[in-house]
Amino acid sequence: MKTYMRVMDVMSRKPVVVGPETTIENSVKLMLKEGVGSLIVEENSILKGIVTEKDLVSKVILKQLDIKKISVSKIMST
Image (tube, rainbow, N blue to C red; front, side):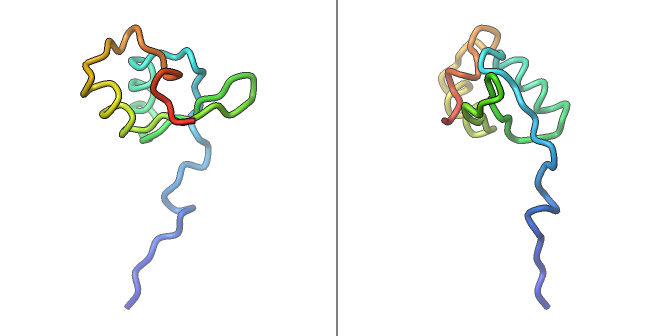
């Protein structure tokens, strides 16, 4: 018996979008509120990058950055 999941069954139909100057603190709150593991970073309707849970752990938590002062543009993957 094969068990499988289609991508469309587990993905977000409407991605959660933030601006590049959104703080890490507000980004984390939004991710928790929306139940997502990543945020699309967009500026003037142009895709600039993505911020994932892995980015938060490796680039913020491990480096002990101030989440109230750092914006997503500093840690996003382009």
